[in-house]
Length: 430
Image (cartoon, rainbow, N blue to C red):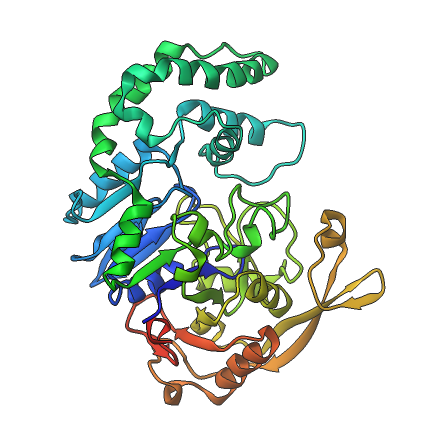
């Protein structure tokens, strides 16, 4: 039996929450391996709605071990708040079902404030961050001055680490003409939250190796989408971590040979939150209608998502950079009733036809989409649970997507409800 990695194949918000929840019923362990509480998943289970930002989706199901890996940057206050919120909804959370990597980097108040200062400033390029400190925390990790979860276990050792951190951050604050942070304030912030998060700490790399050797099924849950990858995405309008499937190994401490089947999640159209290029974006009534029908607002931020036609060129590119074995296609039902549907199949760049999305920021802003046009369908796909329930034109649309992206549709989702799913291939049995 394969382990499974779930990654977004577009710019995030593809409906990973439902698919991960559906897969988590078959999994024994669910692992978050990158990002932070800037991600958002909405799970609808038995009429109950759970909104998760940091915790793995498996935490709402009994008998599953949820793991936050070392590739995640952890806001300890956000973790404590999310745990408390779910406990109020009746979800049991303890060390029995939640572990956090001891070497996970912490997000502190100085990171959140710096993120907001940069994003709100008039100078430079607005990236469209959530202002939650994700980027600055990753910077400190790479700069080797981060404070990690394990550091909270010995508060007496924090003094030198805080001084090293503030040498960098206070220099930045002087540049913003702001008061410097006091070491005492950072220490109090860490000391106060330590008892709430330390009970979950573990050597996750070892834990996962033990689970793998015992034959447990492991589900790796990615956040955001491959087009927001810091290396392979629409740089600089990206997140601060690697979001492609290869990060599942690095961000959890497991070897790449243990990762297994890669399932990419893609909407039947395209959305994006925040700034950055979007070749198939619609600025007309059709785009507004897709957004209205699809309830396209961010789980974490509430920001309105930009909407456009499915871009097969972009998804084909993420199929390759993530080694995607199969696609879970979501929200097909949102396209019900459209007379005409388009798929982006390539681009024009300075008069030349190209079949890939260029890495250059300037070139990304100049590409013009090339479309194929499809007759829509009047019948409903909402709630369909078999191919026989789908209109012929909807099936034709799905099959054409498979051809264009070079990967089969393994799962087809037709509503937010987990059972409204058509399964062609079970990733755990691939």
